[in-house]
Amino acid sequence: MSIRDRIMAADGQWLMGRVMPRDLLQGIGKYLHRVAPEREDELIAAIKNRAEELIEANEDMVVDRPAEGMLGISAVVLAAFETLRPEFDGDERRTILFLQHVFGTVLRDYEKAVRKERPMYGSYFEMPLERLDPGTFEMRVERCFFHDFFALHDAPLVTTVLCAWDTNWMGGSTRRSADCDPSAPR
Image (cartoon, rainbow, N blue to C red):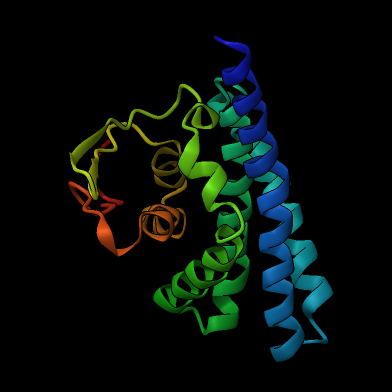
């Protein structure tokens, strides 16, 4: 692995394991501050505690530094989903849509870094990219950390919160070979 790839792997670990979870929790906190200010601290603490439990229980998924970061953001997303679903009257779809929205706002700041460098994803992902023409490429996800994590926790639809990242940076001028199908084996 080149020095550049090692740096990108460390960046992936730091970005997905520290920065994005923090920013996601801040975005969730802003929402809670408006709709449930009396419960904001309690719910954020519950998300953090559950995320720590998930990280500890899934340490075996960490195959390299980027996977450690992916576990961090995956754990926070799942913990937020589990904690906030009752706040959305148990409505799974509304909870996922909310998390997609908040995660999308977090991602806007990181799109350029992720778009440029794939080493930050590490060895857990298999996703060949094919340039179809100068303005379009195809991404086939054959192995996905996020899919495996959420499927392991019987929450495959929550994978779409993180799949929104791809949609965000790809924009409207790209085509994926298949939308994220959380029920498909990877």
